[in-house]
Each structure stands twice: as structure tokens, then as C-alpha cells.
Length: 68
Image (tube, rainbow, N blue to C red; front, side, top):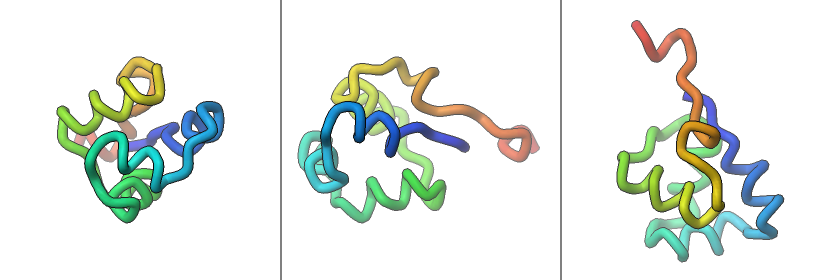
């Protein structure tokens, strides 16, 4: 699954650590999500999108391999 968290964090002038604190996870979790090593829960994806002020659909995008 692709995501635009890194781009949206920059637009909101937030570090990984700052975003992590706002959504109650570790900085490593945000890093893993940005690198597509971890797919967040629905609740976490909604929290991140809320903090970044962007719709979940605009923040995350399914890839072809996600359908298999």
C-alpha cells in the first residue's frame, strides 16, 4: 500500500516523532508505515489522516499487489 504520509508531514511541518506523539505510537511505527513495511490499523490510519488534515483515501492508495 502506498502512502503520502512523508509528503503530508512536510506540508504540516511535522517530524516523525511529532506525528507519532499526536497519534500515540512510536516514531519507529511512523517510519515503518512511511516505508510500507507496516500497514496501519483503520483506527491509526484515521488518526493520522485527521492530524494531517487529509482524507484517508487521499493519504493511502492500494497497489495492484494488494488485490492478490
